[in-house]
Length: 150
Image (tube, rainbow, N blue to C red; front, side):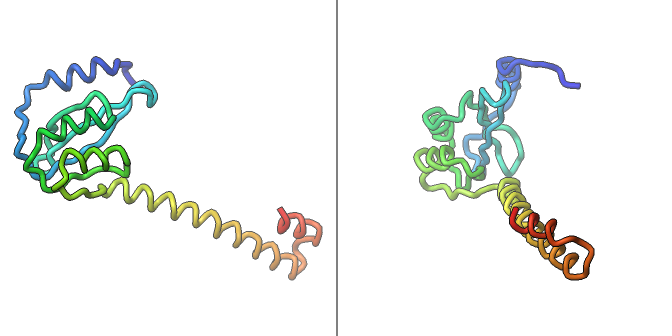
């Protein structure tokens, strides 16, 4: 059960929170989140050391992200996803900062690639099993031919 809340309401609540932004943060992270079934995107900037939110940007477009990141001039590292837009924005706003792809996104990509590899391998294994069945008489030749050529 989910409660429908508009993107503007969530953004207003996030901005209204009484937080003190540490513009001297050295290790920050940036990630996006979506509203309205992936039609509206926002970016959130967090302090990777304290795990506190440093800001919300009502976009994931480069100009807005560059403006938000430009406020943090003591940054040494920025954790991000594989987004080319974030990579370019970080390079422009914080050229001295080292960019790091976060673990979640690395594991996600690795899992997807391993899954694809296993699908291909399993298909190959199934064909070998069919050949063995045919060799030992548990499968007729026409079925085997159809399966291998498919």
